[in-house]
Image (tube, rainbow, N blue to C red):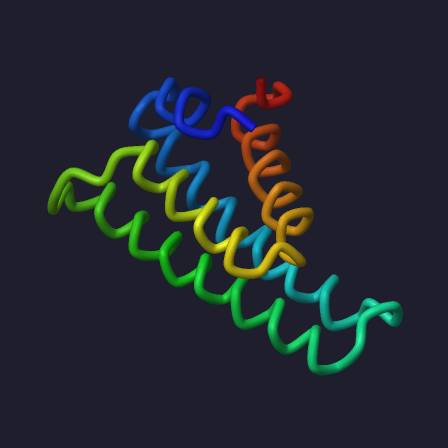
Length: 112
Protein backbone atom coordinates (compact mmCIF):
# COMPACT_ATOMS: atom_id res chain seq x y z
CA UNK A 1 0.00 0.00 0.00
CA UNK A 2 1.33 3.41 -0.91
CA UNK A 3 -0.76 5.27 1.61
CA UNK A 4 1.22 8.46 2.11
CA UNK A 5 1.84 8.94 -1.60
CA UNK A 6 -1.73 8.15 -2.67
CA UNK A 7 -3.57 10.08 0.03
CA UNK A 8 -1.06 12.92 0.02
CA UNK A 9 -1.71 13.35 -3.69
CA UNK A 10 -5.40 14.12 -3.15
CA UNK A 11 -6.75 17.65 -3.06
CA UNK A 12 -7.57 18.96 0.41
CA UNK A 13 -11.30 18.37 -0.05
CA UNK A 14 -10.82 14.84 -1.40
CA UNK A 15 -8.35 14.04 1.39
CA UNK A 16 -10.90 15.10 3.99
CA UNK A 17 -13.56 13.02 2.23
CA UNK A 18 -11.21 10.02 2.22
CA UNK A 19 -10.83 10.16 6.01
CA UNK A 20 -14.58 10.57 6.48
CA UNK A 21 -15.23 7.51 4.31
CA UNK A 22 -12.43 5.65 6.11
CA UNK A 23 -14.16 6.22 9.46
CA UNK A 24 -17.34 4.74 7.99
CA UNK A 25 -15.51 1.77 6.51
CA UNK A 26 -13.76 1.05 9.80
CA UNK A 27 -17.18 0.62 11.41
CA UNK A 28 -17.97 -1.91 8.70
CA UNK A 29 -14.65 -3.64 9.40
CA UNK A 30 -15.59 -3.94 13.08
CA UNK A 31 -18.93 -5.50 12.10
CA UNK A 32 -17.02 -8.00 10.00
CA UNK A 33 -14.78 -8.85 12.94
CA UNK A 34 -17.61 -9.47 15.37
CA UNK A 35 -19.53 -11.63 12.89
CA UNK A 36 -16.51 -13.77 11.94
CA UNK A 37 -17.35 -17.24 13.25
CA UNK A 38 -13.78 -18.40 12.53
CA UNK A 39 -12.31 -16.15 15.23
CA UNK A 40 -12.66 -16.71 18.97
CA UNK A 41 -14.26 -14.15 21.24
CA UNK A 42 -11.01 -13.03 22.90
CA UNK A 43 -9.40 -12.44 19.50
CA UNK A 44 -12.47 -10.55 18.28
CA UNK A 45 -12.22 -8.21 21.26
CA UNK A 46 -8.52 -7.61 20.61
CA UNK A 47 -9.09 -6.88 16.93
CA UNK A 48 -12.01 -4.57 17.63
CA UNK A 49 -9.91 -2.77 20.25
CA UNK A 50 -7.10 -2.07 17.78
CA UNK A 51 -9.42 -1.06 14.94
CA UNK A 52 -11.15 1.27 17.40
CA UNK A 53 -7.77 2.88 18.12
CA UNK A 54 -7.33 3.49 14.40
CA UNK A 55 -10.87 4.94 14.25
CA UNK A 56 -9.97 7.29 17.11
CA UNK A 57 -7.02 8.60 15.10
CA UNK A 58 -9.05 8.89 11.90
CA UNK A 59 -11.64 11.11 13.57
CA UNK A 60 -8.81 13.20 15.04
CA UNK A 61 -7.32 13.52 11.55
CA UNK A 62 -10.67 14.78 10.20
CA UNK A 63 -10.68 17.46 12.90
CA UNK A 64 -7.10 18.49 12.11
CA UNK A 65 -7.85 18.71 8.39
CA UNK A 66 -11.06 20.70 8.87
CA UNK A 67 -9.54 23.27 11.22
CA UNK A 68 -5.91 23.08 10.08
CA UNK A 69 -4.81 22.98 13.72
CA UNK A 70 -1.35 21.57 13.08
CA UNK A 71 0.74 19.59 10.61
CA UNK A 72 -0.06 15.88 10.50
CA UNK A 73 1.42 14.38 7.37
CA UNK A 74 0.16 11.34 5.54
CA UNK A 75 3.57 9.77 6.18
CA UNK A 76 3.03 10.23 9.92
CA UNK A 77 -0.47 8.76 9.61
CA UNK A 78 0.81 5.81 7.60
CA UNK A 79 3.52 5.13 10.18
CA UNK A 80 0.87 5.18 12.89
CA UNK A 81 -1.32 2.73 10.94
CA UNK A 82 1.61 0.39 10.42
CA UNK A 83 2.41 0.60 14.12
CA UNK A 84 -1.10 -0.52 15.04
CA UNK A 85 -0.91 -3.34 12.51
CA UNK A 86 2.43 -4.44 13.95
CA UNK A 87 0.92 -4.35 17.44
CA UNK A 88 -1.85 -6.69 16.30
CA UNK A 89 -1.30 -8.24 12.83
CA UNK A 90 -4.81 -9.74 12.88
CA UNK A 91 -6.20 -6.34 11.83
CA UNK A 92 -4.02 -5.99 8.73
CA UNK A 93 -6.62 -7.23 6.26
CA UNK A 94 -9.42 -5.20 7.87
CA UNK A 95 -7.40 -1.98 7.84
CA UNK A 96 -6.15 -2.66 4.32
CA UNK A 97 -9.68 -3.26 3.06
CA UNK A 98 -10.98 -0.08 4.72
CA UNK A 99 -8.17 2.06 3.28
CA UNK A 100 -8.40 0.65 -0.25
CA UNK A 101 -12.18 0.80 -0.30
CA UNK A 102 -12.19 4.40 0.95
CA UNK A 103 -9.68 5.45 -1.67
CA UNK A 104 -11.71 3.76 -4.40
CA UNK A 105 -14.89 5.47 -3.19
CA UNK A 106 -13.28 8.91 -3.26
CA UNK A 107 -11.29 8.60 -6.49
CA UNK A 108 -12.95 5.83 -8.47
CA UNK A 109 -9.49 4.25 -8.80
CA UNK A 110 -7.55 1.48 -7.12
CA UNK A 111 -4.82 2.56 -4.73
CA UNK A 112 -1.36 2.21 -6.29
